[in-house]
Length: 144
Image 1 (cartoon, rainbow, N blue to C red):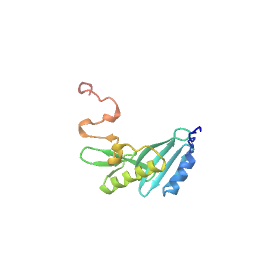
Image 2: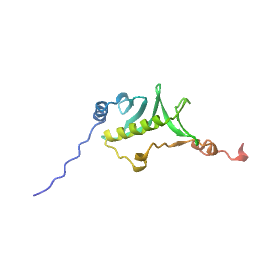
Image 3: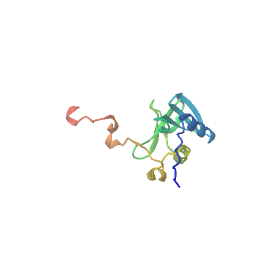
Image 4: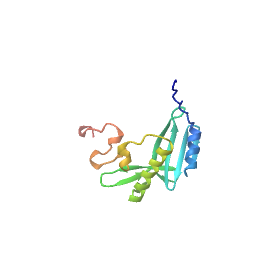
């Protein structure tokens, strides 16, 4: 007569990485709570934020040991690595990046937001008219 709710199973970070390996991703453990996954020329950083929670960090084009993040410079999108290396983002890169992110979210049972499912999104913008916007408060003209 009494109905019981099934207890949710907490999946560990190691089990989630095993699921990704089974799905065709190459997993590289960096630290106990940090891993980098690769597929083709794309890479992403995953971080364990709790018992069974996973956060997707930087996602982008793998340039050597770095991940070049998608950046919008106003007239086109480019990939920018932490060392300053740049690569032009082509249509096939954007399609592959979108599919890569969606596959990760699907395998990790994460929520996929509507605006992210429409296409490739990026958080970095470097327009000429807002130069150094991401570096904090800009200097005023009288401070130069």
